[in-house]
Image: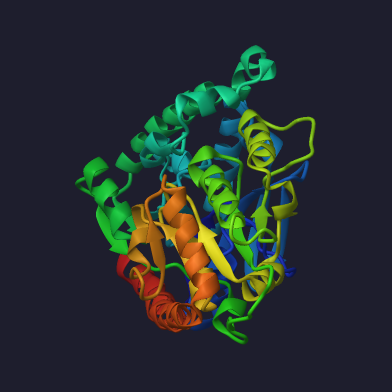
Length: 413
């Protein structure tokens, strides 16, 4: 009889191309079902008005309405808790795999609504992120993130947002302390988890990349009169370091006037409802004189993201903190020369001047210098490319990660 695993996660499994956060979950689900003797079930949250129950391949799935599941009032959380408890009673899983502390999932477990044995997977780690929240913005820059709107509408203020972020981090710590089994993907995360919950059993896992990044075309050097830089950012938050990258681009422009930064993700510009930090970015672009050098691509699916990476001259990952850094791993496995901030778990993925080029998070000058070196030094670009592919195929080996995940399930059950 097949073992039943119930997932609580932020990703709805779909037949279309995957985009956005949690893109590693669907490929892992597919392989776990294919290689392991498991029945897999998934509970997630969507924009639907009522609960949807459907099947993705052989995986049964429930999609809770976000408005009812994660509303501001406790009644919404109670609704979600009760629905999840009801589904668990129906499924009777042997194990519940809770993906992340950022949403309601870990809270549901801490409150006792989940009765089966559970393992918590650390994705983001808000309690550790909070001290990086301002991303090295100085006081003058912080003020530039605050127009009259931000002071009149307090929730828009970065100061208030950081305070709310801190509160979420404190709630996260409570949740992490409630788990006996915690799964992690980097030494940096394991260090923080051990300090929070000394009694938890900690498992070491890897992060599975999307299938198309393992197979097919790899990056090749292209000589360009107008080289381009690619970067990716899920959200307009200072600790993602986009302001540092923009300053670096302005420095690169001194030698390469037509350089182009192509920025993918959910940063919205040209919108009357921009938050203060986004307004700061727009104004910074104007102040630096790089309006013609920056292009916002919006959200990309796996194919679009892969194509952008293959076409660029260099990829830059400027974040101040990451629990792993999926975008970095996907860039490296394609062999794209990557300039990256030497911080948190991203420092574990490469080797300086071998498979990546690392710079201090606040040092736009060094970031710009390394970008220029990749443009000008073909031998360096080839070295970084070849070694990055080799490193990622080992670190993010598909078979290794899948086998390890299946072994963890079997050990827990």
